Length: 90
Image: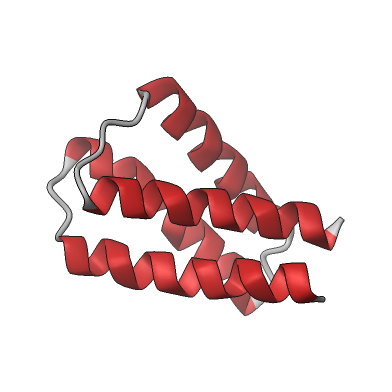
């Protein structure tokens, strides 16, 4: 189960990097993954990693409506990517 959640973290990392490099992402896929990531964060809310998940989901949706600086997206990708790799290593 932890490895599946880690793969989800790496998918969100890829979406952050795609947004940072201005690669077009289908909106329905982005919203579906952001909602799933938000729900994953809400379910395990008492963990610091889950708080990162909720913030990352909100940031992922905001990339559609706002021009988020690339450095913020890179930092978010690094944090969520490290969390995903640690989940895969566990």
